[in-house]
Amino acid sequence: MLKENPLFIFSGRTNIPLTEAISGYLQTEMGSVRLGNFSDGEIHCQIEDNVRGADVFIVQPTGNPPNESLIELLIMLDAFRRASPARVCVVIPYLGYARQDRKDAPRVPITAKLIANLITTAGAGRVLTIDLHAAQIQGFFDIPVDHLYAAPVLISAIRRKGLDRLMLVSPDAGGVERARAFAKRLEVDLAIMDKRRPEANKAEIMNVIGSVQGCDCVIVDDIIDTAGTLVRSAEALLERGARSVYAAAVHPVFSGQAIARISSSRIEKVMVTDTLQLSAEAARCQKIEQLSLAVLLGEAIRRIHEGASVSSLFV
Image (tube, rainbow, N blue to C red; front, side):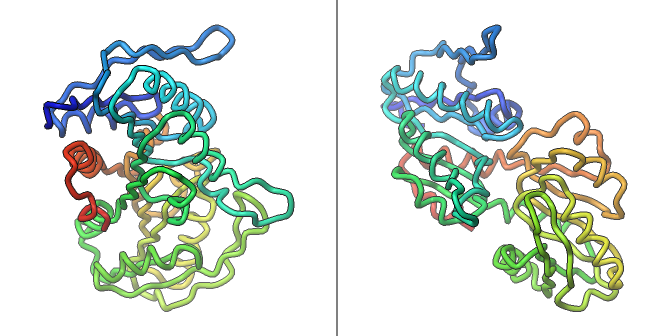
C-alpha cells in the first residue's frame, strides 16, 4: 500500500461481516467508528481514528433496512468529509432504490437519481458498486463510479454443480442480456420467461420461450426480493419438463415471505452473494448458498488506492 496516503476501511452496520472479509483480504484492520442510535431513533456517528490525508473506504450496502442504511451512510459521509481525508470512496455492494430508475408511470419520482445526488452531496468522491439494476444508473452520479459484476463468482458456483444438461434462464425480457452473458461463458443455451407484472412485487408467468425438456435449468437474476417471481418461474419450468431448477442471483434482498417460499418450493438451490447480510432465517435455510465477493471488492479497493487499473475486474 502507498505510504503517502494511508488506507482506512470503515463499515456501517448493514454488512459488517463483508467488511471484515475485505479487510482480511487486504491484510489491514478495520477503522474504528462509533455508530449508535439516540432514544428517538436518530443515528449518531463518531470517527475514532485520525483520517486526515488518508484514503477512506466506507462499506455500506443500502438495504435491509434501506432507509436507515442510507441515512447512516450519509451521516458517515458527512463525518468523514469534515475529518479532512484525502479521498472518500463509498463501497455500496447493493444500491437500494436502484429499481426506481425511470418514470414508468405519471407523477412518480426517479428515486435512483435522488439517491445519487444525496451520496455525492454528502461527500463521496467515488463509488464502488456491484451489479446495478440498470447499468445507466452510473450516469446519475457526478463522480467516478466503478461498476463491478458478480458474474465470475456465480458462474464458478454454477460450474461446481456439475449439471449434465445445463440451460440458463432469464426470468424476464429485461434480464436477457445478463443471462445471455452467463450462457455464453458457460457455452450453453438460453431460455426466456415471458412475464407480466400487473403491480409492484407481483408477476405472472405467461410463457417459456425455448425448450427446457429434460434440462437442468438455472434462473439468473440480479435481485431476489419476495421470491414470488422466482418460485413461479421454477414451477413453469418444471411443468414444461425441466429436470431440475436452480437459481443464481447477486443481491439477496429476501423480503416478506421470500424464505418461506424458497423453502417450500421445488428449487434445488439458490446461489446468492454477500452484497447483503443474510437474516438468521435465511442463513438457516438449507436451499440458500451464499458466496463471498470479498476478494473482488478487496482487489478493487487495492487498485483504486494504488492508482492501478480496475478495468480488468469489469467482467
